[in-house]
Image (cartoon, rainbow, N blue to C red; front, side):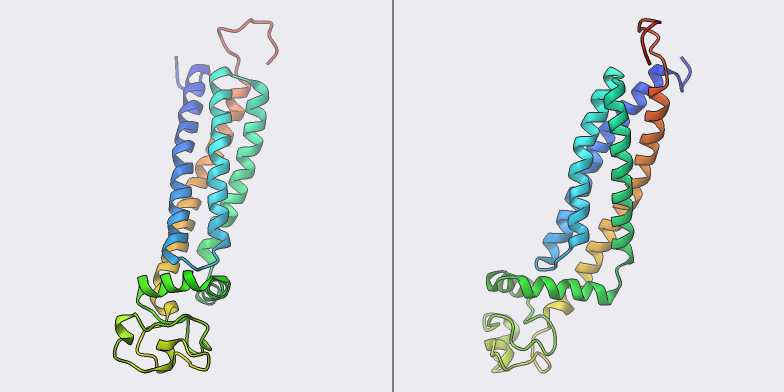
Amino acid sequence: MVCGGFTCSKNTLAALNIFYILVSFVLVGVAAYARVVTVVTSLALVGGVISCGVFLFFTALIGLIGACRHHQVLLFFYMIILFLVFLVQFSLACACLAVNEEQREQLAKSGWDFSSNETRIIVQATSQCCGFKDQDGGQHPSCRSLTCCTKSEAGCCSGNSNSTLKNCPCSSCLEKLSDKINYGFKLTGGIGLFFSFTEILGVWITVRYRNQKNPQANPSSFL
């Protein structure tokens, strides 16, 4: 049977949904990595991509069942939901890629402000940084345990509420995490954008498959 027939469309759609299941794990994994490496950043856009990945997983399951059974109702809802997932994922991916340096800093600052002291201590220890940025106003735990503060009496090392990071011997956490934040956004946005176009292909194949007649079905059955 030539490709484009009922069997070919069925197998293609089933394989595509298996591919979507794998894609959903990739999206969740990459976006989760972007959140972990930055620790304190409030990455709402990245969180949205994680949600898309989870939603795509369940959508792909519906599509896989619908493809195997040629179930008209499941295929209809699958087609609509997949298109909506495409719109959301495409928008979030473009937003991740379009975020500029100032916006990334604002998101990071928001995450730092709402983080607990325990989280800030972890960030400072793992990144060997002290405070968020110059003129931090002492809104950070003591950096005394850091290598850069071992032999320094600077106010930033003690977390003095009146200190700034201007003359601090340690780098600020924004400086240390800036490249990771940028990488997290670009990686998440790039992968999300690439895979979003495959979802349009899935919608097109589904429309084609729904309108094809199963050669093994009752000729008088409703399509």
